[in-house]
Amino acid sequence: MIAAISWVPKGVAQSVPSVAEPPSKEEIEEIIETGALDTEEADYEEDDGDMDVDAAKQADEVAHASAAAEVLGKTSNDITNALRELDMEHYDDEDDGIELFSKGLGDTYYLSNDMDPYLKDNDDIDSEEEEDMTIKAEDAVIVCARNEDDVSQLEVYILEETEDGAPNLYVHHDIILSAFPLCTAWLDCPIKGGERGNFIAVGSMEPSIEIWDLDIIDEVQPCMVLGGVAEKGKKEKKKSIKYKEDSHTDSILGLAWNKEFRNIIASASADKLVKIWDVATGNCNITMEHHTDKVQAVAWNHHVPKVLLSGSFDHSVVMKDGRNPSHSGYRWSVAADVESLAWDPHTEYSFVVSLENGMVQGFDIRAASSDPSSELKPSYTLHAHDKAVCTISYNPSAPNLLATGSTDKMVKLWDLSNNQPSCVATRNPKAGAVFSISFSEDSPFVLAIGGSKGTLEVWDTLSDAAVAQRYSSYGGKSKSK
Image (cartoon, rainbow, N blue to C red):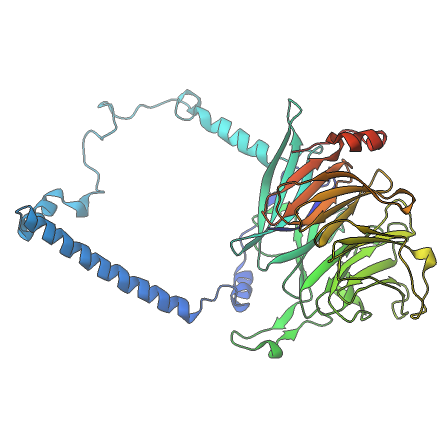
């Protein structure tokens, strides 16, 4: 399944990613100390059992061979003599003289590799591999958090346009993760120096946030870890786990990078807390405890970047100002568990919330009140899907265009104009239950879709006649698959 999708802005990725250095002795020791490579005693017992089975099987085969020999009128001695003639113990030893695949005149010698017909294709292969590894400035890069058969990883996709104009989508490289990923957030804070980085923050079933460098392949450890477990013995119970200072103590369910204050990330967790982190120092600056159940999503306001929105399983959405985190904030009640939320990129006053019951609600913060007794009604309530609306994405170019994705396997596009939502297009992307969708900033009508089937789908929404008729003036060229 694909749990989360993040786009990387065009031109940011290093054209040819660096290859990670092999881990040092200290890093290997650190990995061993974490217990990541430990094998349970049961595994060894299972291996011993397998060895016993193999030995018994081998003895059984010998017995069958002897029985077959007797049926054919041959004795065990005949078989032994035949094996001796084959001399299997020296099978791999080279014989002097003419080799089996030689022409009888010895191997032909070529003055250069260019003259050797067997090496002529090697340069072409190397060239093709180098071309596949090169990320061009016009390539779109999509990062998917994926899990399949107990293997968790980040897959870095390239979406390129071929010479004939057709799109080509392929995995450029992947990054193995130690835990089931739940959410991601791309960020460009120059953690390693320079003016701009290319990193992805990953939240998982663990209480830590891992930050990976997307410009390095074959990396085995993140370049930074925010929070997490400080000490954990092999057989210690959960109650005795010690966490790093200011760490979350449960799964990370939501992440949001602040584009204005580029060193800041907000996190939402199943421990009911919202935290604000400084990735430049690796420290948690602010912890907020305004929810009473799991916090599913967080989002920074695009126009007032110090304002943070959070949504929870306690059936509420809370708006807080990072400059005054002790303030109770502004609270809206919703009818079900919050699945996702998003600020309208075209205005600072509006946001939408998607719910577990299939509803989507829109709100205007100008009607907000800090009085907990006040009833703040939504601007509209939309029955968008038959099942949970796990993910939403505003179109960055066309005002009032919202995409929704649901576990009912459908993706829909909505026109929210005048607070009177109308469905513009509906599509079954064949992704299974839809868990994550995201419009591209560079190609605003290209929608990336991920779901339970684990395959990344890309929809050029302008290929839909109704969308093109209504929004083509905002469009431009986009790619699809």
